[in-house]
Length: 217
Image 1 (tube, rainbow, N blue to C red):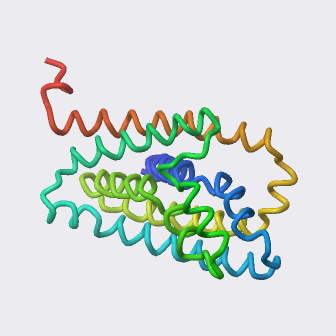
Image 2 (cartoon, one colour):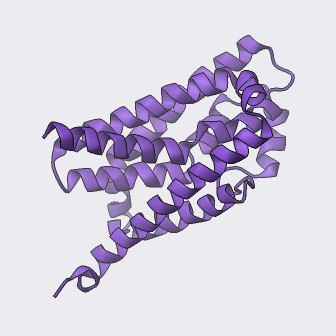
């Protein structure tokens, strides 16, 4: 039992952290806060991370209910989420900023805003469509098995939000230490992991929609 809890906790944490990818947010954060003091950057990082936690936890807990109310099956959402994550992963492997995460127009708009903590930093940079899709699918999988699996997912969201704060609060140091090469390496590694998660989501969705595909008979 303990081994199963540890295993699922690691899977949840890796999935949520990879798709949120706070390191990928560093260049955008620095570009949008170039005129701000270190203290103001830390304040925005704190508020953005807290808002991202609230957004992701909300969708994790009630997302499946909302989609059912709209007539969207979990299988369809898994496939759609997998496609979205696959698109993002390809951009990450090519070390290109993904429009699915944030567009150039949103970055430019953020650069002239007084406060970017909620939009666009918390959403869509940290808690974007890909992150929301990931936590909804993970939570749906947890509820279809043992309910204790809900706790590791919420813990993974909390841990990722805390890590996001520390990464963004020290964005200048992170950028200086890793540099362009280090960022690109992290982007490619995260992209590879995200591609695997995306394929798994699509396989699970297709298996739910077409049970015959997963039949061994």
